[in-house]
Length: 293
Image 1 (spheres, helix red, strand yellow):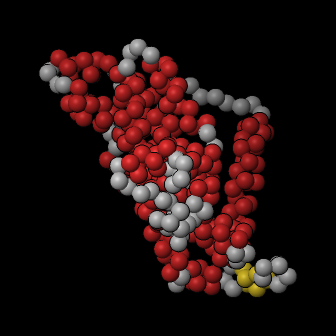
Image 2 (cartoon, rainbow, N blue to C red):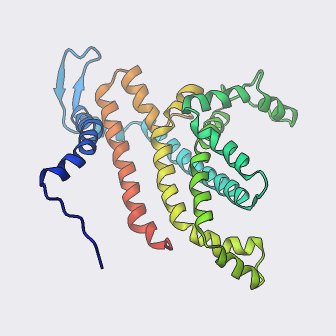
Image 3 (cartoon, rainbow, N blue to C red):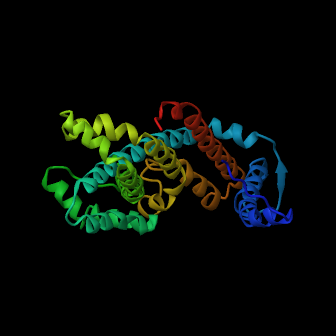
């Protein structure tokens, strides 16, 4: 028998949801509407004159070679961070699920990086890969590779991918480990009785049952790569060298706060928001059909 909750007072439900509605209005709806309005304005650097130009800022962006280049960098960066972060986190989660002795200490150490701020994560990797004194850079040099992210765009791109991935691995690890531990042990034991080895059990039993978790993490990691990696890039490469690491979210900052082109910066933020919303809708509409619940 289905039980339903009824409120005797009509005002109480609205009071309960009011705090969340206010937070959404103040921190999302209002800033998004302001950005949309700002994207249709042309202002000087001092804010003394304003002209309504409709969609001229968007049209100018689409004709800029720099913006198209930044768009390509963002696509490659988001794919690299998502793929690397999910694969490493899945490997660590499977290893943690198999470990019996010292499992708590192992899981705690893997979770720690998530408490580190993005800028701090970028600085840590910047120190380790410093061309002069970095330990990892010295190891690469000993193997015959002269690492220098200040001059080489590929090295700089690898640096920000590693730093952003390291920051996100802990988050992915938590969900993958929870998903593995939620799988009934009877299914794994039945597969073992049928003669399936550890790898066979993982590919045929555990991995398909992890597909809802993996689907959720794909969406979260793409949004993370598009938005939350600004601190990593700003603390390490500042979009350089030669815009090799200038993703869309950093270009919004550089054009708006450094270049003082507020209209173009707002238009870029609107396009970025539309891209992420579109990707999320597409994933839930088409990719979710292949997920086994």
